[in-house]
Image 1 (spheres, rainbow, N blue to C red):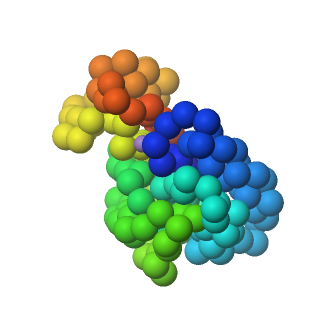
Image 2 (cartoon, rainbow, N blue to C red):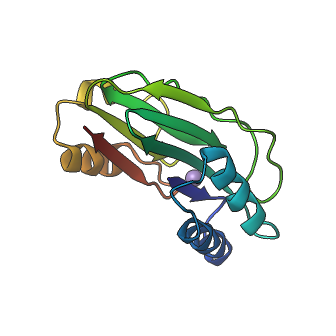
Image 3 (cartoon, helix red, strand yellow):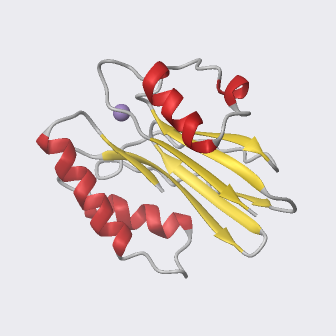
Length: 155
Ligand SMILES: [Mn+2]
């Protein structure tokens, strides 16, 4: 899961903390849809947040998200992530949930809208995961926002 609370400062920190609290209550049986529902409920009355969730189970992954968090497949089966417009905590239309069979190992990158649009990520995939994340934050993050990058390797 990657969550980006709206805005910045104490109100955004509060929303992010609520999202973490909600996530601590997730169990292995939760679908991504249910997890998003839980986040939405917990964030009610807060600044709100965007989030993307991946759920790995056996040889498949399901995924869904609300708001401006991006997902790119770096290796392995393409994960056709499409965020649903909305704000967790305020308005959440029924999220589009996708599912893909994983027949080979892969790598996925999630990042918030604090990373510049049009960043040439495909040209950076040869970098080791830690370095890739460092480069994105150091060279491609926006001055006016914070940024989070999450790299997932699965096998
Ligand atoms: Mn942001």
